[in-house]
Length: 466
Ligand SMILES: Cc1ncc(COP(=O)(O)O)c(C=O)c1O
Image (cartoon, rainbow, N blue to C red; front, side, top):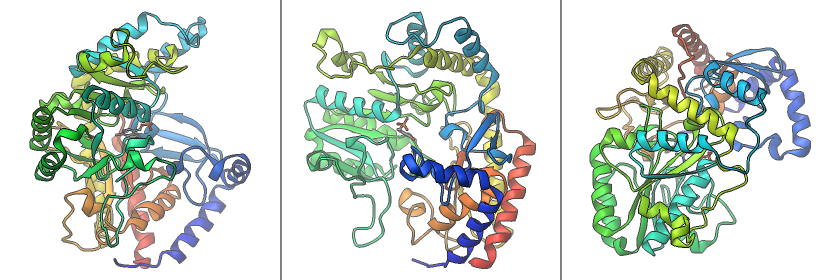
């Protein structure tokens, strides 16, 4: 592993940022009094402190210090139309203004309409809504274990399915003797659960085949993101997902596609449809909520029925206080309908902007002699990608093909991609986390020019420290 000393650069950035954003700094000190690390989502609590946001419209944020920040985080990739799009806010404002939206605890016509859209666009037979992607993947795994009467869960190294007991193993790459993705990433999870989680490699059909050969008749499910998210923004090959489908059929296991990121990101539906591979269960979240906390498990009627009356509610996916919350579902239905109606304009445009961002970010660093590579690309299956994740390999000709490459600190400079970039970009009025983000329909060509200029300045600033 190469070691670059970023101490002086990080100190310089932190000092400059404290001077640039004194109000956010003061608020952070106040936040620390009652909130752990000053907030409620670890990734967003940038060191030394995050900007405190007061307004967000389209592609831009305003912070407490009066800075306008160009945002590529976009609601943790949920806000595909940008922040607070009129399409959604007008419907919500009208509804809330007429006294409808916060009366949760009942059921209504809206749930039916939203479920119809989701099933129609994804090939699912039944859906149940819940409130977070983590809950959705947990329920999907519970369903698969109940349906098969088996225990083992196979997941991908680098795959992030939220913070729930079966998903907290094999997320981050750990360099060292046991190089790779085998660690349990949280205290408090019973060993009896983590022992039942087998970690495989993304988009490697032969490895998956080996796992099924070894554990096949004990496997309840294989859960996989068809477009890998936190693990590196990369599409699985069609062959991999087809192999996953064949193996799960052959061994009687449930195939779960986690489409919390990819659902409605590449077209108005699931990417499973684009791959021509129908999972048994699919989880959705982020985009489908239209900016509200909506998630869903959708899939085969016979599996989903385990949550229902006819099966004696065998799986206690019985709902939470805010499940299918009316104001949230109103945003969800409005957004999904909009994406369906405008699919032909929205997605090709997003794909073009995504390609440009990936190209301009890499170019900005290469111009300064800093090796940079972007993932987030589309392929022959995905029509156009609006996602990007920048990596900084130590060597010009480094092989960056899998999470085991770009998340490996021996191959890529992780401190530069994460800590340095977070702070350096903020000083250029650009918000993204750990060098990754997503384009929304609100981003313009001018915004991308702004990003390009910001990256060039960041590259010049960090160059002397490499
Ligand atoms: C693929 C994937 N699954 C599940 C989750 C968890 O969703 P949530 O953060 O809504 O709990 C995430 C969150 O980023 C995700 O990217």
